[in-house]
View 1 (cartoon, rainbow, N blue to C red):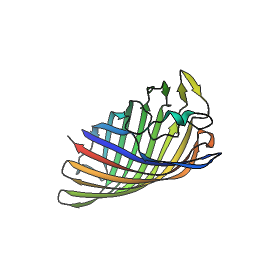
View 2: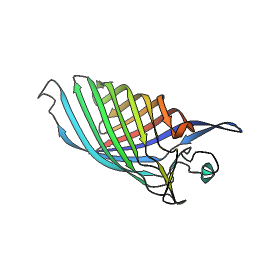
View 3: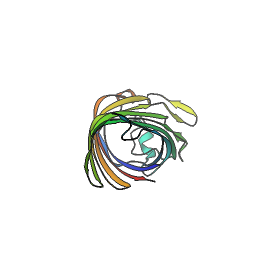
Length: 215
């Protein structure tokens, strides 16, 4: 088992008739548990493979403001959903010696918040290459790749909210350090291409921190 906690930092920008506005701050806390269902032995093949499946929960720690739903302002311009959401996840890693490729696929099922607003379910995918440095129990993994997000339409009082679906593709760079069963990572995400909510929201950079513990 592997247990991961992720708390992202967001930096968004939007245009209004009164000028540009920015939204910065910590987002929703996600806790994800993955179970290794298949893994080759280190000495059994030139390439080693690892497949993990699992699920998790997202807590509404990011700020959700009802005022962002008013008028022409797009309601997706938020730090958090204001709801408890649930995740299904899969991760696959293939490695040869110290070089490896990591791929992931997550699906988030979102629920209505206290304002009877439900953000659309979300698909996350990504792939990256990493290099492993080892000094005894200490491991350092720099990595680089891409990460994408696909958003389904939002709902308010059971009705579809138009221009709330979309997608975005990020370039992702990170560094993870592990010692024994504990590891910690930091990553930076920069938009490559995006089509969010009919152009009402522009994603900028993001950075996040994750904590892992292997059971």
